[in-house]
Length: 637
Image (tube, rainbow, N blue to C red; front, side, top):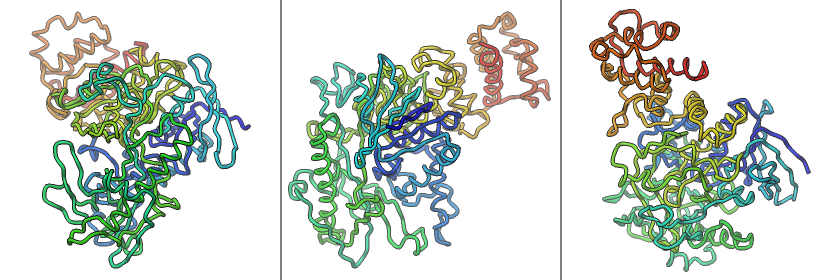
């Protein structure tokens, strides 16, 4: 059996796994990425959900630089195929699918192409190895450390083993948690354990796991009949699922038209997760629209595939496939037509979109995984708008990323009620990535320290990417500094250094929607908030970097930084004189020594041109960040 050595092993080529690989490689370390299906990319490729679940700020703020790179490359992939008259040519934010649930929708093959392109430089340099069609089967663990993971190709029986310093579980179901026998959670927790208002009244129930879905893509071809074969169990699924164009949102039910936009709806069923809007493209590229079918009617909620026997798992997956094929058959034969008839035989199953013989996604769209017993668990109360009355969710000062999405829990048969709860913009705490009982394993996907409920917000595309990116960066930081993740979590100095590392990579940690990653004061304003040096409006997501800084405000920020640095504040004793002094240079001169002032003068000469220059909040926070770097991080703290 072949044995491979690497700095970081990433098990699972999910969206989080790909982000982790990019993160590790950009830090200059070696990585090995192993995926059980043919395609890396998880949600956007092998699971077919390439209409991204995001938020209203996403085009300007709310994800990392590498996630923006992924999104931009998707658009470039399609831009050359646009027709000459398409308005999308002048629209930097165009979406190939123009669907109403997402800002960006596209074909899975585009997602695969972009991810491979982003990883290709590291493959060429030999820094990264990628293996597909290999599944983890054995984990070698001694006390609190994992040493190797063994993989098998289930078709050929070929095995290989990987040894690494750090291991990132980015599998869709948290497979390494089970194989390594660490403590983990499955299913729904009780109110007694989490104190969440929507948790179970009774004991924990590991069988209550969010439904999963085999997605598929269809074209609408007027005048054609493209009927699929009626699948086994069709009548049962039709009547018990049931198949419908209506959606129960908890407080109301909404009926959608196939192509017609009905009153009170957000759009049509067809454009819900449309992947290709053919009107934008040349006819030789796309003659017809392509829509993704990922609807409550093909959510399989009878049984979970977590912690079951292989025989039972295969039976459940077969039944789930028949559910999805049955929904397609229903759409073709019994769905109410906008014109009053029944059925749309014009719908054609596009098997090539998913790249499979049956036309269904290679792997089901998985919403919920095993979850680590983490150093920190995110609860409903931390992010729900019902409990968080200000502009942001609960502030986690160990933040390693941010996100925003509803708590969207798809139902299980035992718990018929789905949840759709509004949240405030939230953070990803470092402690949620670190398991309690293993020292060199990091959670890198849907397996972080959430609950059954909060997983409904942290499972979506941009958040999973941020989780994986943070996991990869944490592994690299630990290798480079010869420290453990728990030490980074518990040590203020290490954690702050790691957070600055993330910020300088272009990973936002705090919600300031008016300070994009491209801003000169992005890192400074972010770390200023994380260290509680700068002020922010609790009722607003704005930092206001261009607003002139008030003298009292400047004094407060400088004093907080001085306290943080444990500086001698004798020169700040004359508070009244300071507050009446509008010159930043004089304020700084009363606070820091000549060496530090020299550093500031070198970095920001424009502030010293005039004696009484009026500076802005963004300028001041950059000055304070430079002082922080000079006195705390560069000179030993």
